[in-house]
Length: 149
Image (cartoon, rainbow, N blue to C red; front, side, top):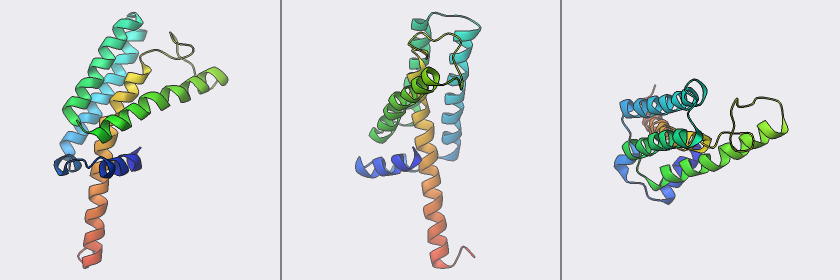
């Protein structure tokens, strides 16, 4: 997904300020995603909320994550790709193998809210990829000029 972010940033001409996320913002986005991931399991496991309520909470957190930490077409595309691809892979893994299972799936063998968890992963992954790409470019420039030695 990181390479896809770099390619889509070029394709969609992501604004320069979005290509340079500060490290603390990258960590905050990862933290929000981790919180959302944790909450999704907590709401479905301990609190036993109905799937509609979980969908509302988890989609709300995914929306906040995108609006707060990304707001780019590349980020939206990566989030959408993971929101579709992740559940498709999970449907195959849970439906065709015994590798793992969900305790309370409500859509075939996966929970209906799982796409929103993947969607929320888009901004942190994009910003981490951007930060890594920026660091790699900086290192390459230093090595070329001889300062990296």
